Image 1 (cartoon, rainbow, N blue to C red):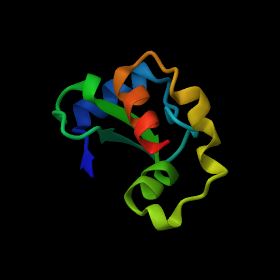
Image 2: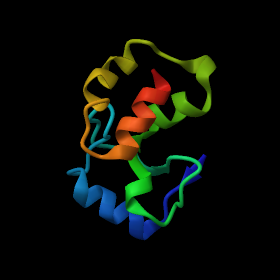
Image 3: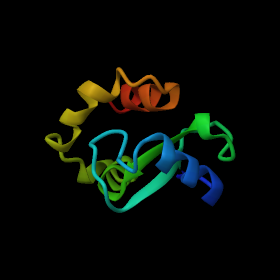
Length: 89
């Protein structure tokens, strides 16, 4: 996992209304860089909650019910969010 820089995270929080771009959670948020992109570019990053990040990093903990939120995320206007949602699906 590549974590976004503090400056990028601040931009993500502003851009996304301080909500996880997948499930809408408002706590435990972090910037997640969509590989192989540059972690210093906000357009290459997604704001995700700890639950989403954990499930991305350890697929054996996958909770299929949690990922129902992807049906909305695939239509996100941000390309990184849309790409990562399709990759998860």
